[in-house]
Each structure stands twice: as structure tokens, then as C-alpha cells.
Length: 247
Figure 1 (cartoon, one colour):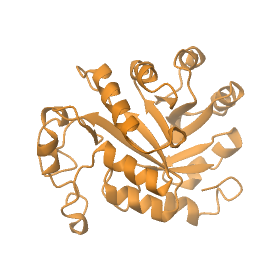
Figure 2: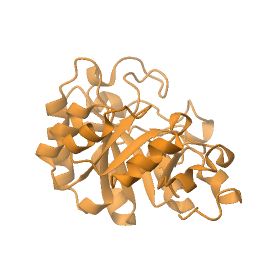
Figure 3: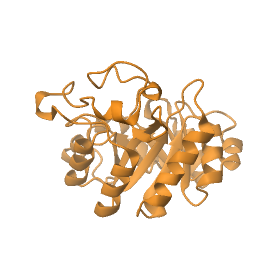
């Protein structure tokens, strides 16, 4: 199994920041997962939560704050004094880093009640087109099937993965509908039978967010291709996944 650094190397640096992404690259991860949503003035920004309350020194919804207002927030001090002054990055900045370092990016399209999915997809696709990154380095994912259908209209050559906590019984119909490349699911609820069905249907299978190798020691035998983790360092140190670990 390969490793994707969840929101960057988020156990050693504040999540979804350039520091977290650079640490993942330095560590040797071949893939980074991040979250994208729009600011009030429609700039794609890399941030997970609907509000900035948890991970910055600010308050309020990301969608209610302009890019300038977001940029003034400290997105590192909540994690540790070492990262004081860290800022929220734009998607464009992260794509520039990824293009220069040749690392793959899993872009999760974040949708919240009332958000304009079409506008989100349009703006994200525009930033990608204006970047120098190769399509093969990118993978879209989302819990919203509508978002994946929409992004396919704006960026049809970039692969798509459906996010689920638990894989539904009609998963194949949904994956065919979005012309999916991969399934992304919670490792805690994946069964061997489901994994075999997904792999037999020809899809990649990615599991989130596993931070301890012993909890997914059987998943490689089930055909899981990739583990999304906050702690890639735990997997590299561990012998539990030695036969299937490859980063």
C-alpha cells in the first residue's frame, strides 16, 4: 500500500498549510490530500472546516471572509509556537509547489449546505488550467457526488474518487455515473467482501484516516491500494506493513 499525507504531514505541522505539505514532501510521501473551498471573493483556498475557528486565530465562515481577510489570519499558532505566522494557502500556491516537486495531490472538494457547487468547480478548474501541474498528478475527491459530476464538466481529464464513510450497496451505479477512478472510504468500516467487490470492478481503493499500522494490517491483503494518514512516519517505522508498503 502507498501512503497519502492527510492534509499534509498533519501530525508534525498544522494541517493544510505549506509547512505540512513541505514536510510530507521531505518525508518522501508521493501524495498529499488537501481540502478546497471558496473565499467570499471566490478564491479557491486550502482549508478543511466550514469556519476558521478551530485552526486559526479568527472567527467565522471561510465563505464569509475575503482572501485578504483569510490571509491575515494565523493558521499555525494553534498547533505550536514553532508555526506562528503560518498562513492559509491558496490552491494556486499549493499547485505550484506540487508541480515543482512532482508530488501528487488529492483535492477534496468541500461542500457545505447552501454552497454554490458549480462556482466552486469552475474556479478550481480555472486555477488548475492556469497552473503548470500535470493532470496525472491530480485526483479529485468529494463526499458530494454532485460535485464530482460537476467537476467532470470543467476538468474532464482529471481523475475522480468518491468519498464515503461506508460503501453503499449501490456503489457500482454511483461510480459508473461519475466515471470514477477510485473509492475513498473509512478504514474502520471497510469489509474484506466490499474491498474485493471494489477491486474486482476495476477501481482503486483508498482508506482514510488510519494512523496506526496495526489497524490496517489486513487491508493490503484485501487489495487496498493506498492509506490516507496523518502519520506516515508510523508506517515507515513499522514492520507490520513491510510486505505491502511502498512509498
